[in-house]
Amino acid sequence: MCGRFNQTASGEEVAEAFSLDAAPELAPRYNIAPTQPVAVVSLQPKTGRRGLAQLRWGLVPRDALGKERGFINARAETAWEKPAFSEAFAERRCLIPATGFYEWQKLDARRRQPWLIRLATPGPFAFAGLWEPAAAVPGATASCTILTTEPNEVARPIHDRMPVILDPADYARWLDASVTIAAELRSLLRPFPAAAMVAFAVSSRVNNPAFDDPGCLTPI
Image 1 (cartoon, rainbow, N blue to C red):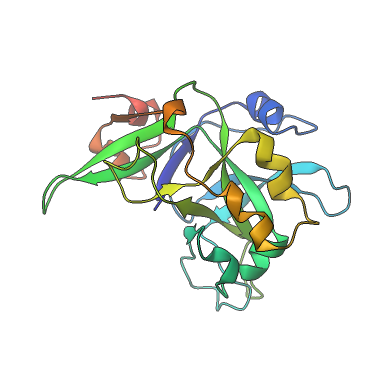
Image 2: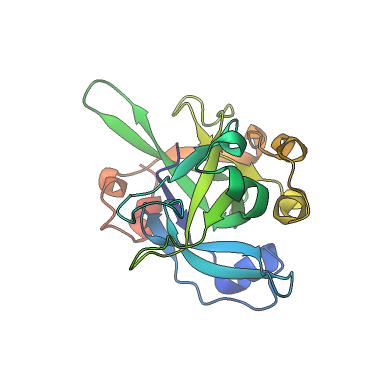
């Protein structure tokens, strides 16, 4: 599961990392929580160029009643065949920029220790995501979800799942609207190489989404 993450890269850094035509205005986000807006990169229907938009984190199917919290994660192993995600998997894949994500390690029956996991070389990377247009109910907005997979050696001692982090060489393939067959994409949805990642324990202030500041990133 991926229930919190951060995205502190500047608009210029994101534009360079994701080959955007212009740098978006992005404020640093240190503790992004479900139902909040997140930056999403997808192909623009009219131009075929990459664009960035803010979507609600928690995918709500278009036939929903509009009150659902939404699916913040989808299992990469089965998303392509699940009714809530299959159409989006075939037609609406996206990149979700991030600079790190949090997982909670169970210490005992009552205590959990938050950890920050990121690339060993700091900078923006992409979660594999799916997005959905707004449901046909008042107040609904377009939404997205993050695909998860088995953990690598860095994440495994902390949690039994981790978000799918795509290799930059695979961004174009993942976004390619002409690729609609799941079998041609599932090989991209693998655990990111552990040698390229680091993890360290952080303060329990991350538990509260009201805290969205650099203190969330401080190792303890």
